View 1 (cartoon, rainbow, N blue to C red):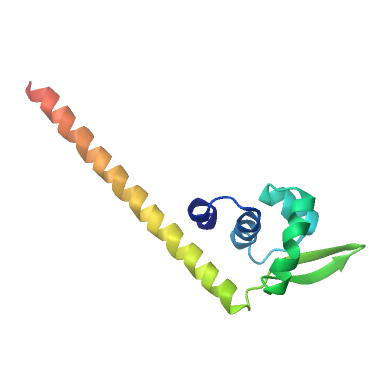
View 2: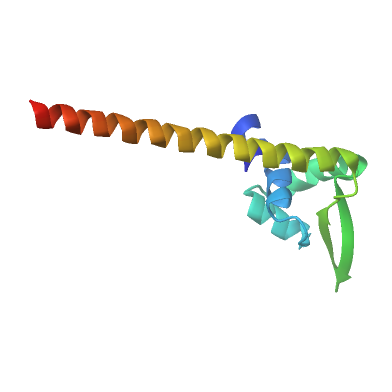
Length: 116
């Protein structure tokens, strides 16, 4: 999720974001395209790059369909996973802090209204 928020929704980011959010699961290319919110032809245009960088790996074949997963053994993917986790934590902390500030401001406004 953090990748899309920070780097916008390019096809590769959408694919990686889906695979990161669902690491440990395997999907067909059709399922990856659907869950990433891109067309199958768009996925195919970018798939070679993901394979060339070893970001994805085939896990098994069911009938004529090959299933793929995020290649968590790849050191770059490991760093992306760490980045995604840290970015999500950072944003969660920021949002929580903003909510605390909003609540404090509302308390101050209520007190000001009570004394008026």
